[in-house]
Length: 431
Figure 1 (cartoon, rainbow, N blue to C red):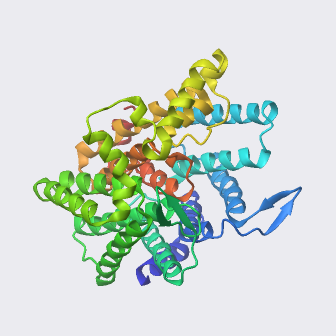
Figure 2: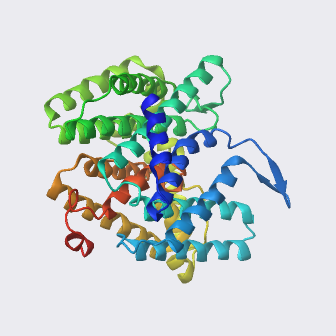
């Protein structure tokens, strides 16, 4: 906590009146307070014209104004990877949103909420490189994200101990849903704490700096809290994210595959055999894979009916959408529980293709930079992007707010024009 407060104080005091300075102050304050604002999402403040405004909506609008202003009116003329194609993607979403408002009578505020989340995330990506231009900047933002996600985990455990939390019942299992009415949010946040805590310690070691004792204690606390939250939420996608993180970071990056793989096999078997909650949650998938009959009929109930939903939506897209709708969508994602199908329905095959191109170009640039410099923060960015891409198979991670910003601020590392860290501008600007 002391490290976190010192970093914030140094940033606010030592920041000058430059464009980068304004971005620094904005990013520091935003990432420091936003996770706690998320906890107030269901607290109405006042209403305007029948539209209820809460702290989350107000913050989203403010971020849109400030981040948009910093990007558009204080442009530093640096090349930004995917900038044009991202604007094409944003334009497609804006276009389909107009369609859904005028032709499908969707409530205006619901559409605005979706657009604000989308624009806010990419604006943070556009301006993020101004903040993380050196090692100290990186450590500061990583520590802020780490400590705030750790603190929200502590708040979740306090709430759990008091018994004043929402309950989600899935497949007969009661799960902790925190203040969000969704077990995924606290479980994903716990994983983000592990990711950024690990990265903070790795960056200290990479630069041969002494890891503060308080950071070591905080990391142990992070692991304990994350394990407990994963236990009480029993979120399958979060468990998958944990496995992928262990394999990619400790197995591949740290080259400890000979330890991680047996640990995951025996650990997974132990958890499945001793935890009734996990057995209930994953039993349909285990039976489907082990009984040998891999038919669509047996697959439909999997994932709490997600596969049946995907089948319905894909059939609707194929048979009910006209040619224009197939190309550009209808502005509605139908709660697809699959990011790719959601974008197919919302912005059509054109929008989905653009989104996949954006992901591909991110991966290509990250691989290029990592092969050249072997920077741990670049590898962790690839890891985090992989986690979001995988969760997208059964959820909507690119509709998230704060969690998506964590990915975007790391992706903005791509645009850091530093000869010390990532080579000359000309070398990667045209990749």
